[in-house]
Length: 72
Image (cartoon, one colour):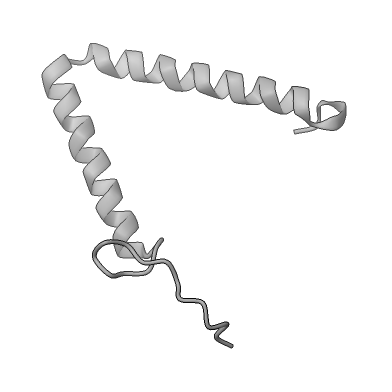
């Protein structure tokens, strides 16, 4: 049942979160990753892995602090 509120749309007119939009975003991310690999070399992969691992550790630590009893 429509609520009378229009769905959010992207600049291209599609509804936000559509599968096509997600594929376009994935393609952009992959292209940027390939470009970064080509420009900075394989060392950028190690740096990216370490950055992601650090972010995950911080996120887990925050969950442990915020949730009662340390339950995740």
